[in-house]
Length: 80
Image (cartoon, rainbow, N blue to C red; front, side, top):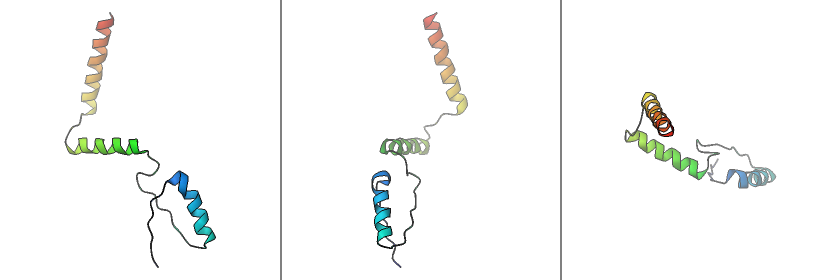
């Protein structure tokens, strides 16, 4: 048995490919990767975020809550 791996556009190519393989009488298995269903922009954003994590550019939940609270207080004082 031989395994063939082909990367395709799921929405555009998969239905036609499945139909073609079925008509040829070939058995096939579809394996999804962890990125399937995500746009290129989403994948790019995730990869950038992972690099931030690796580089230690993180904030805890408490730190973020404090930052947001200070910004809200600052906005309230400007509008008062």
